[in-house]
Image: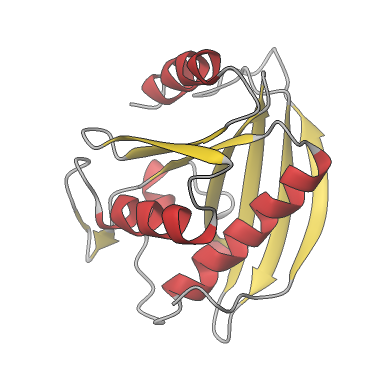
Length: 177
C-alpha cells in the first residue's frame, strides 16, 4: 500500500520569528519540500521544535497562502493518498538521517468535503497515519503514541527521553486546538 512515493525537492528553510504570533510560534525553523502528483502539487512543511520534535504538515500548493486550518484536510479525490503519505514518510526518514534523535508528530486533520468537516476525534487521516507509521517505521526504533480525541499521532524515537518529547508535543499540539 505504501510501497511507492513521489520525488520531492527541498525548497528551503526559514527560521521562526519570535515577533510573529502564530499558533505555534515556538518552532526553531521550518523546512519545506515540494512534490507533484499526476494532477496536483503539494508542499510539505517540517516544523522543528526543541528537543528534536518535528511536526509534519502537508497541503496543496495552491493553498499555501490559505491561513485556515482546513487547508490540511482538503479532499482532492485523486486516489493517491498512500503515495502522498509515503512521500511524507520518505521526507521524515531523510530528517532522521540528519538528526538521529528525531521524533515526529502528525495531526490527523479533519477531512473537508463540500464544506462539511468531519469531527476531530479519530479522523480518517489519523487512522491512515497510524497504519502507515506502524507499517513503515515499526516499533523497534520508535514508540507509537496516539491521542484519539484530538487525532494527534506521535512517533517517539527510542534514543531520547520520550516523556520529555510527549510533554513538549502535548503543549505544542494543545495550542493548535
